[in-house]
Image 1 (cartoon, rainbow, N blue to C red):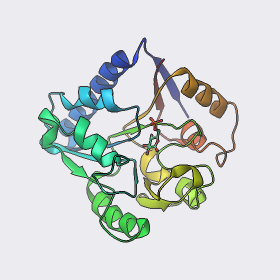
Image 2 (tube, rainbow, N blue to C red):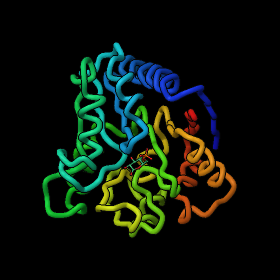
Image 3 (cartoon, rainbow, N blue to C red):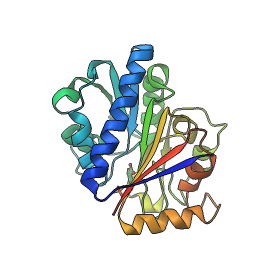
Length: 232
Ligand SMILES: O=C1O[C@H](COP(=O)(O)O)[C@@H](O)[C@H](O)[C@H]1O
């Protein structure tokens, strides 16, 4: 397991550097195999990075974008990660990318997980780029402490695809790519900002109980090097 720590003076510099690194990786993938895929996180952290990346001069028509995780809410909900991506990443040149939402208009998160697994697996895996975030409870993607499917989601033997997750700290039901779908990305990034998140990261690195802090699975078991981008 390899980890690279990249510290920046502020969020704007981080966003600019991360956008360049991600765009370069997508462009290289397009050059090598004709298409590229990226799974991004939601939450509050990635907005500035999304805005920078949306301006990248790459062949966006050949790029598939999806989310590492989603709340089981429709696209117009203020809690929707899809809404965040639509308003901050699928703009300008990047509006030409193909976006695969995780939320589906069906009764349950379980049904949605099955539908979206079939859509994504064939075309986009392994991802060329995965950008993870982290909550102050040590969750990443929707791998929540106490989550009902956490053990299966983190198990390397669980096939690549999307699963449902219910957890007290998660609010609504969630959809999340499994660990095995994310850990082998061409470029695997953990994007965190603020002193509090650095403290959480340090705590995660100091222990090994993945049920307490699921981010530990990524930090200790990912096949790909984990590139940690941090700004105060
Ligand atoms: O619930 C979520 O939270 C994490 C972290 O979000 P942040 O607001 O602290 O940046 C995010 O990575 C994940 O995609 C999202 O669904």
